[in-house]
Every structure is written in C-alpha cells, then in structure tokens.
Length: 268
Ligand SMILES: Cc1cc2nc3c(=O)[nH]c(=O)nc-3n(C[C@H](O)[C@H](O)[C@H](O)COP(=O)(O)OP(=O)(O)OC[C@H]3O[C@@H](n4cnc5c(N)ncnc54)[C@H](O)[C@@H]3O)c2cc1C
Image (cartoon, rainbow, N blue to C red):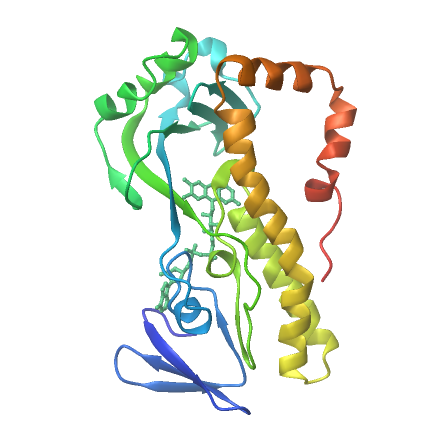
C-alpha cells in the first residue's frame, strides 16, 4: 500500500504489468485495476474515449445542523422534492446531528466542476421558481459546494490482458440513483469472487469480472440519466404524466419494479 503515488501510465508485458509513477518509479504486479475515478488515466490508456460527458446539471451540497432544519421537515427519510429542471434531496446523518442537503439544478452548465465553494445566493437563484416550503431549506444551508455532474455512455472493453477498471473509471454515472459508490463496491466484491474462482488465471478472472458487471452497471448509468429527465426534472404535461403513473402504483409494486437494483445480491 503506497499513499500519494500518482500513476501516469502502465505497460502490460504479458506475465506482468508495470505501473509508471510520477516520481519515476516502475512498480510491477500480476495485474492492474484502474480504480482512479472519473478522470482515470488507466481508462485513457485502455479505452481512450476522451473526457467524460458534461451533463449540464449543477449539484449544490451542504449540511444543516438539525436544530436549524425547518422543524416540520425533520423527517427520518430520504426526501426528494421534484420541480421543473431541479430537485432537492435531504435526509438525516450522523445520528440526527445534521441533515444532508443536495440541491440540483439543470442549468446547462458548460464545464465540469468538482466541489467548488459557492455563495448561498448562487444556490438560491436556481430555485426561485419552486414552492416556498422546499425553497426555504436552502436558506439554512452553509458552506455550499458545487459539482457539475459528468457521466459516460456505457462501453465494452474495460479490460485487456491483465489490466481492468473498477468504479467510476469503468462506468461513471449521474448520482440520481445514488449508486456510483455502491456500484464501485459491488465491482470490488465481484472482482474478489472472480479471482477466488479463477485458480490463478488472471486474464480469465478479469474477463469474467468485466462480463459479470457490464450490463448491470450499464443499466444503472442509463437509468440514472432517464430518472433525471423523466422523473426528477419534468414540467407541465410531462410532470402530470409522471405523477399519474407514479401514483397509480402501490408501494409493493414500486419495490417490485426496483428489485433488479436493490432486491438481488450481485453475483460475486
Ligand atoms: C454530487 C454527488 C453525489 C453523489 N452521491 C452518491 C450517493 O448518494 N451514493 C453513491 O453510491 N454514490 C454517489 N456519488 C458517486 C460516488 O461519489 C462515486 O461514484 C464514487 O466516489 C466512485 O468511487 P471510485 O472509487 O470509483 O472513484 P473515486 O472516489 O473518484 O476515487 C478515485 C481515487 O483515485 C485517485 N486517483 C485518481 N487518479 C489517480 C492517478 N493517476 N494515480 C493514483 N491515484 C489516482 C483519486 O485521488 C481518488 O482517491 C455521488 C457523486 C456526486 C458527484
């Protein structure tokens, strides 16, 4: 385990892989898993499909001390307020000490941003058109930070030889299913299982891992986009249709619809 070691590139030499570090070192191993996130260097070398897609959706995050959260909204539930081109999510954290607050606005933001501090006034501007009850939550947030969300289209070819990808490096997704980190963890379980079964066949283990994970993660990538467009952000007739479809189903039916994601253990 080496902290603070930046990997620049790799060389797959058949029986071994060498990672080249920024300090000039070459580190040898039996395999290389690029778990280096949205702007993965390993992906750039392996797939070479350029920069991630900028979604144009701006997400502002803050936490509110529970005492400052409007009393009538201190709900013990993940709560989502959906409005035209925007939505707000909140839920309690850390044993009710704080509420996590995530406010998203589809404003066609042109460039990727990751955690930039912003003024509350900027956050307010995106939510002037929504009902006063969710809007006033924003007034209580402090230390707001901005992300402009990115994702990619699902692709094959995450692994070649002894090199593979995991997590956002393999399948970056919008956070609308709240599944990016969850999928990375599932990948890790699947990868460990694949190696355990492989009897030392590294290339076979990586190929089986990628095959086991491709369609499930692709589904979450594409469905996350669809949720943003069709469930969280529509207006007018589109929103009325959403309401009609959603309210016509029982809780049990919704659990059934989402069972593909939450209801079955992933293969390992
Ligand atoms: C606003 C927002 C809300 C989210 N909400 C949720 C949620 O509710 N639930 C959920 O499951 N997910 C959520 N996610 C997604 C989640 O944060 C990511 O999917 C997850 O962090 C991906 O994990 P990862 O390990 O693949 O990549 P990362 O967490 O990005 O980790 C990559 C690591 O690699 C390191 N690295 C990068 N390049 C190099 C290099 N060249 N050499 C060495 N190291 C390198 C980085 O320093 C970093 O430590 C959200 C994301 C955003 C932006």
